[in-house]
Length: 637
Image (cartoon, rainbow, N blue to C red; front, side):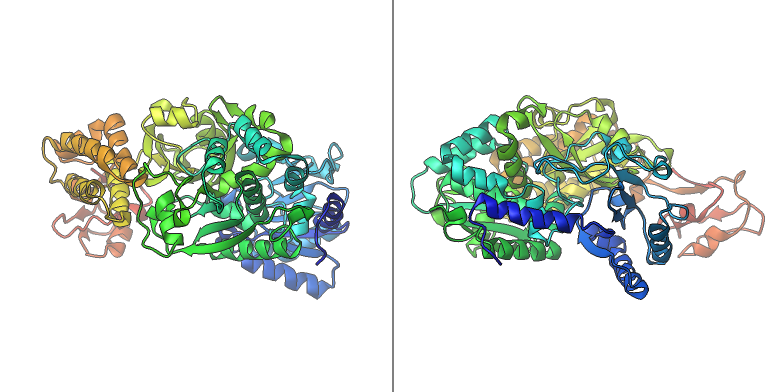
């Protein structure tokens, strides 16, 4: 492959990328990120390939990442010259022949697209438009444009700008979308100091959880003594329900690589590492190819863009330890040691990997960097709110209609995410709370729906931004049981190095288990609060320091549920088995016998067409009876 050593080389590669993005005929894109594959995208892709071959059609079939709306995957996009891009959701292999027929006939009579894209997302791209802005054929006007779809309407895609748009294995498509132009600008017209100044001006804060100003960290690392320095990407995403970084690594790996090269130039580093969870095989595969391609084109290695600057990247796979998301534990793991944190007064920007100055940022932070440089720090700082600028990527999961990955401007009200983007709660149930910041985050109640989603507001509310996990709960969620779940997770993930975390979190777990099992005692809540203070004050790292957050926030906003468990021996949400019982309402029971047939212990009896009864001594409270009853005759108390 020809080396890219000048702006003209980059433009030629970009032109080739445009021809790949928009070949002129029909191009079919299948979302093949992990979320799509899990939904059956592999089978859809295979069916499309077979159908195209069978009909001898000159169509281009390609893979892409996730656009974010995971609830409608598998997603297939059709790109045709002089037409809007059409996105078809919930595709199956069986629908493929009808889809191909529609493309040939130019109709949408059998399968309706979920939305159309009239113009591409132009953030950090070349000023070029290949879609049909303002020229939508009459038969497609009934299909909403992507910016009219509530899920996308309030989003601003910066870190995820290329996900679902490009083939992540095609470097030239990344270049066509403006890739590596920021790097070329940096290496040929900016000093390291001016790069750092622009990042500081942008207000970009680390998206991995700590929220520390990225530019300030870069400056500290650049100023640290030492000839050898490192830049590191934290791709060790361990929060339950979180997959923001995974989606970027799978769908747009070059954005992370470009960001790291820019950071290395600014800091004065020549070596970099991407630390990825071993549970992310597709991310590792796509990153590996992207690094290899960048190296073969001269954008990694010696004398990048014909300058004296040299830099290269290696991938290191983690073993899935949650604590390795913490900076010093991650660096210990990179060194081949046990992933244990060290005292925070030793700063990694001065004494990090192999005791040398090291700068660690997470995947999303690095992916933002090329845009900050391309558009300028001032442009980025005008998105969001003061002290929390730009956008944030969240994985929206739990009891929500539109499950998926969203990128929203900082400061957006919580209710806009839950109801406008997320589409509200399934089954007409009430929104109860949302847990942000992963296992160490807190729960925000429904009464705080107007809360600004930014670093400072979330912290004041008793939660945190974290890396961006957002788990939505409805009225059927027991907040005591939820706190128990997250504390139990943290017990298993504690490295055990310091006593406050090792023993304190385990003891909190014991108390919460007792409360959920009906063994709670007066004063347990006060003990939990007292222990939480000791754990926060005495723990060695952020895992222990933030571990009590789920407990403290649920006590703060849902104290009445703790009291019901302890004093009344009842679980208001009907979740904790030891504190509930199932009842059959005689007036509603038709005696159909379905519940009796499905009961694993045979505890339900009664004559046909007459009200049945439950033998509580034999009932194991599995809930199968209630799930199988079509007449809502079974309730939980």
